[in-house]
Image (cartoon, rainbow, N blue to C red; front, side):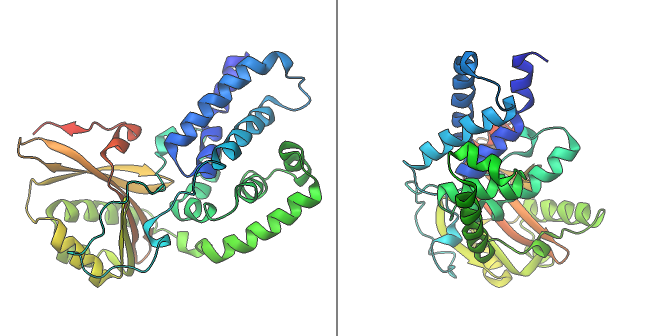
Length: 315
């Protein structure tokens, strides 16, 4: 295998690694591009005391840590305060806030064994929880608990001691236990129940059929809409929000199914005055056996190209 092919072989997992560290696909892509540029320029000095994969992780992680020195953590609205109750009293979009971004699944490796492990650690709730950890703790936890590196390997990569790595890991695990959802919250319905739930949800949302949606949302559903800081918790308040913000009727919206962070997602287009359909937001859903338990609706049309989707669709 030549060097170019070996670099390409690791690109998907390195992009996912940088995303876990930074919480932003765009930042992760920038860091990865710089990592590969440095690797190409520095390969003549690479002494092969480690594998190329380890060397690339070292470069990328250091660049992530450097980037995190100059940026705030990526947030979701529920990290900022209590939920709202009045859909007519939404806070203005907080464009200056660094918001968490979704990760399109089509950017992952096509290796089934690798994809399963990557997707579980990329779930939005997990990545949001990671953002609360100090950067070096975040790196240690990702390497030890996600990538299953040995403590000595992580210590060598971060230029520290094994004892320091173990101490950081203990603190990171304790903090993450307070923030990350329990494993049983990731229990999705089996097929074909999952397929039926998504089909019903997409059709009900296109029609703004609140009666149908009521039967698909869990009692404790959480609805977030970055960059709008206001979020809603509970089926009653979420349905009140949807009733106020989406007009009922056929032909007003198109829901295009996709996936992000190992979770089902929909890209929503709404009909404009020109008769065409225009990108509005990407919804990433969390499913349980009881229904849709969480929706993160990223109100950013600029995310659509990352999912391989156009900004505009003809009438």
